[in-house]
Amino acid sequence: MNGGNERLRPPRSRASDVLRVGAAGLRARPARVALSALGIAIGIATMVAVIGVSSSSREDLLRRLDRLGTNLLTVEAGQTVFGGQTRLPVGAPDMVRRIAPVTSAAATGTVDATVRRTGKIPKSVTGGIAVRAADVELLTTLEGRVRAGAWLNAATARHPAVVLGSVAAERLGLTGPGARVWIGGRWFTVIGVLDALPLAPEIERSALVGFEAAERHLDFDGHPTTIYERSADAAVEAVREVLPRTVDPENPEEVNVSRPSDALSAKAAAAGAFTGLMLGLGAVALLVGGVGVANMMVISVLERRREIGLRRSLGATRGQVRVQFLAESLLLSATGGVAGAVLGALASAGYAASKGWPVVVPPWAFGGAIGATLVIGTLAGLYPAMRAARLPPTEALAAS
Image 1 (cartoon, rainbow, N blue to C red):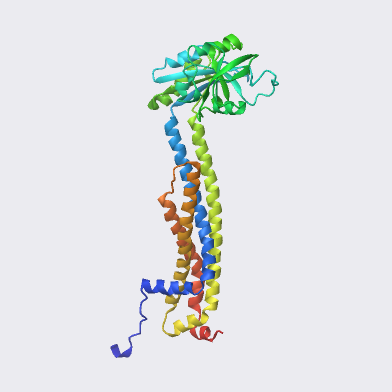
Image 2: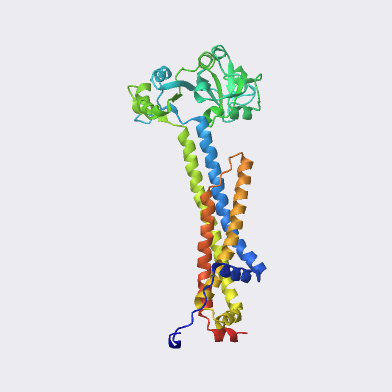
């Protein structure tokens, strides 16, 4: 025994013992534990649900972009240096089709006319519906579909026939072909209704007639307003560079070229910013939950001073007391975190299913949730654990 000078060493606590003691401390106060864990669960559930809903929405958007394609470009007339409105040349669509990588191109032209159910309705009541002349190749270029009826062809494009966009048909109260509408002082027969066109929302709000019919019956001047073109994916940027000079060699700076899919990408970015805001709110809720855990642990230390004194008098070290209360805090936070992660995932899946989106909850969201709860549990339990460890055994045992 080295002359009796060897110091006694307290037995080391095994991890299973620490967890068992910590769990026993929580089981003694079930109502308080449930309320404290609820605060953590709300914060974690909010964060996981926001991440899941955002990821599901983004996945749905990416799938839509894959279906619609990102190789669609639009060409529109710009403005002169003096601010005046320019016009695209009549032959611009044919010139665009001559670009080697271009697979299809079609044009529309704005017609100075209104569409109404009858001629008795005032001209000012347009319902926000535009009248456009359209190439017969437009539907192919936009990769659109006809919901009911038929699209324009070489024959119907010469006669007073009209195809309605999905929004235009809804505003006119029409669901299919056969009806007549009043355009530019005469009747046009509705021969079809289009399905939704996310890359060309302006077409959804339009009544489309053939170029020849527009020139013959609606005093259309034949100048296109917008040209839509598709090309090979690898050649999109190259085509984008040459389009202005191809469409208007004399004034290429007066031609605007855009990619409609960029608008959907911007929408995804805006959704990401909103997701960041919601994550911030979830973090605030998680912080409030952490404060609740810390408050509970401080009260627990005050209520259990005799227990602490008894453990110290039986040989428990300050470190062991500190670990005990820190384990209780971590177990409490982890319980709330796991429950919140499950609730958040279920809420995200339910919302995504109701919207028809693919259900996507990234695995890192669960890992981040558990990590956040452990950090919160450590921070919330650190001060109460240190306070419990500093209590002198005699003072703790003397506490009433």
